[in-house]
Image (tube, rainbow, N blue to C red; front, side, top):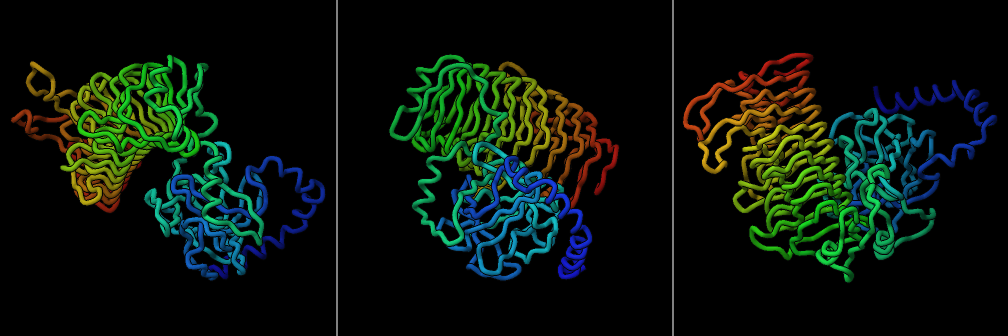
Length: 518
């Protein structure tokens, strides 16, 4: 059916219910609902939290199909948008260009990567967005055409001008977070005022429910003020070190029970570190919470965790020279929620995983709604782990190549041989890992990889898509190089999983439930 036909049918339907709508709005004034709206009706610039750039109609082209990108603030009408509330925090977003076209998901597609563009108003779900509050003044825009499973997103976490705006599975992270800056239809705005606006804004990523429960004191770290190392040296158990904006630091150790929380798009830049001692944040103790902060440019791991019972929420690790997050040497019962590890790369491509839960890590480590993408080695690597992990609704995409560096490139590599214990021969260490609702897409090797894991691994409602070697690589037997002899592995459980655009090797797994593509 053409868009014209859809629009005509919607118009007819609207006319049919016009009396009922009129009656409702007469009986209940519209302003009675206004207090419940996160964003009031009106004109706004819409700024992405991660890039600090604005939604922009490319080339100021006022036509159906015009592309929407991000661009530095320039005050043009192609960066102005009018919000109209439809109720229940569902809105439409109209361009400030003369044609008054709407922000629209191309063809109403319910797929990752669907383009965001302009289209004439038609009342379809492709032009409706559910506002989700992330933190004070920060919102995500779920798409109604996807059943609110996807959201408006800056493709690939780009911070560049002209980066594309698309639809992607909702994760609530900074690439999907936006600030609505009020303006008037005839006002102009310079990029300089955009900059000053962001400096007074609130935390870049977190819901109010995820704020620290610490009852201790707060110590603020900001550019030109107290250094991170100084603040940590003064902090006591229960205290919170608040990172305000971007700060630079050398490698530091976080004392047990000391928390770190970010605001104003917090970044800790470890570019001054060098060599294998250049780990950004090291956690040897227990009971810390870290949230709403980006860890970048460390010469080794971004975050190195050997302690236990630590919690990480909305933490980003990127552009480090080893794994973004590494849990090892007994680290147990650490929890990771909505964390993102991307573009970590070492020179040889051998070590920089997104999440390295390996090398004698303990039991009970848990990951939920976390993403590993564009890392030079693997998304998740569980090599020589000593405890099973649980992963829920996590994504491992496009790993194995980063800025011309190539590595192993598995999405979820579950590891099973321990050849790193002093005084012991290499041996199998069976672990019963659990993965639920996880997705592996476009990885250089396999999406879900046994990697000699001899335990009974459960994969439920997981999807492998377009991975170069196998979507699911789960052979029945193998000859691990560290052992030097053939072994028969435990039988994995693949329950209601999907494989598409790729092949599988699943002689060592049992399918059940509603599986497809195998």
